[in-house]
Image (cartoon, rainbow, N blue to C red; front, side, top):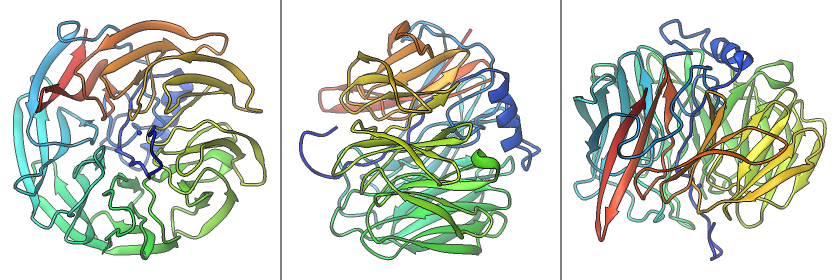
Amino acid sequence: MKRFAFSCWCLCAAIILAGAAAPIAAQDASTELADFPKLNAATDWPWWRGPSRNGIASATPVPTKLSETDNVVWKVPVPGRGHSSPIVVGDRVFLTTADEKLQIHSVLAFDRDTGKSLWKTDVNQGNFPAKNHAKNTEASATLACDGDRLFASFYAHDAVLEVALDLEGNVVWKEDVCRFRPTMFEYGYAPSPLIYKDTVVIAAEYDGPSFLIALDRATGKQVWETPRRNSISFSTPVVTSAGGKEQLLISGHELVAAFNPADGKPLWKVAGTTHATCGTMVWDGDIVFASGGYPKAETLAVKADGSKVLWRNNQKCYEQSMLAFDGHLYALTDGGVMFCWRGSDGKEMWKHRLTGPVSASPVLAGGNVYQANERGTLYVFKPNPEKFDLVEENQVGNDAFPSPAICGGQIFLRVAQRIGDKRQEFLYCFGK
């Protein structure tokens, strides 16, 4: 999943930066995990944007200085190519990857303590799409785990493929969710699967019949299906209780929309963002935020019941998601400028020039925000509405699209190193 000078639709590599927050954030994460007793909000990072689904982790301190030598617990090579972020459950770290030459989709497991490769399961071979965006991969969707099963989303055979595996790498079920064959913009697929109670929700949006679809986690059988506009977009849906009730949020198609996650029925929608978006929506209290994309740039805030658009501006975070925390919204825009806006009215508190382009999402961890750009520069700063308060500027790899998982005092980061025309991915574990 994440700033182009040319006017085309960019792709959302499903990427995340994780973090830690104050006690209220940890409490929210525990609420999200109430339906998953085998998961732990403090020590696990089970899906896209972490246990609280908003890039905020538990308050356990983590290192701020990261490099090839600083605070490295282990580093291992990752086969293939992918922009999916790592997830962490128990004593294991999981990733998806793709061998683009042999056209093989795979799921990988590593030992959390040592980085040792535990297993690799090939879940599909052949029939990759003929074209993809240069910034996308055939393994951009981040895994989700309910404590018993892993859920992986891929695009092959002109369909969105959903695969469930147990934690030993055995395939439990595999389903073609729906037909998926973009023709106007052949930029691949990126949304990560969303786990909600007994279902896994998948977004499939392109210039053909488009849907949000929920499958039974145990069997893969369809539970509900909700049509979406027939136009390509890449955002991952998210479930929140903002506004006093559970609602599934997603942007794209020039809408900010909410659905009942239990049955997929629409709750509300407002005109906003742009035609194509990639980032996952965020929230703070009774306000939700979205940004995009193509063909224009817009960030906006909406009352969480959909009753009112509170503010809009002309900035954009296309591929990357944003961070909402303590009444403020933090965003590293496509142009490489970090903004802090007041959530209630959009007042610009400050802006600071950093470096783009950007695909990774910001995260709050141990009282600091972690935000990377595509060049492997990882900024660590305080979420301070008064000023940009830099803690560290790190360099890890030189090709950085996935975001780290941060949990249990450790940071798990997937990056690549490019030397000439050679590229190799690595998975790092950083810790004290």
